[in-house]
Image (cartoon, rainbow, N blue to C red; front, side, top):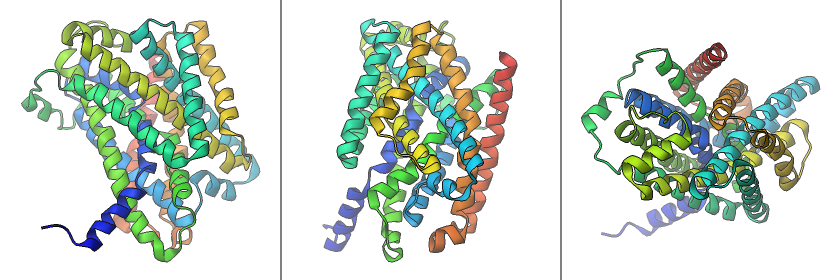
Length: 409
């Protein structure tokens, strides 16, 4: 029996409201995720699968809170911070956010450049320039229509999913072994470091800042009486987008655990791709490279968008997205030009990103838990409790990541 007309209209409206979470979810499948998930699977098999499941659950909560903040207040998280912080603290907050943005750019442009090197043999610097140009083209699309930009990102997300999931399913998965990876445990300090890196690569500061602005820009200033259906649609948006991103991350780990475990050289993306070609065939290797390229292109544009949102909110200065994109690309291209080891640069970028997480996550949880800020959309007590537990866990693991990384260097 066909659903009632009212129900069909409700679902049709919900579908039209989807999109912002898909843009934010790109941060969860960027080249940094590829590097750490492949490393975790190849070194420890399914041991750290539980970390991805936990990280994705936290990501769903965090991104929902960010989007709800934008809908309930009509302001982005950086704008709300800019309104509340004294000038000196705003400037200091912006400096750390820009450092995080530079690390984000580095990982994303580097990932795209590595993909072009794997697919076509291009040197890293020309590959980085091509990725930069392509990301500028995507941002030009955003400046004309946010919805078209969202659709373009959705297409790239689909390409990323196909590229990595194909490899994960190329061989039969030993599901009994995989199920053991859902039991939280560590085996040695390296597994702790990788777990912290996986969580740090999943909960991304710029995605937290950005989602509040994406929801606000898509829906505009929403009257209190109209917020509930939009927030319900936002839950669906976040659920679908983050499930896709989570499955992609799990597919990366499954690929490494089933096909690359114990294979030498898989601690680098290039080595992992070479091993994939050897063990799974050139077709899967090409799909892996295409997925990595789409990841670099999409995440590079989204990261620049987030940087513009942060600057406008904290400094109350609006710089055209294209101008900002060109300026922020310079450090990434310099790193490529001087020949820094790509894998080492990716690791360092993830550590810098980890340092920035508390600055985004703590204010978000405090603001969405404030009735004065949120009105009737204030977080329920169980949401506040879950958000605070998640914040403590994420911050603690990222402090551990930074400490272990500093000790390693």
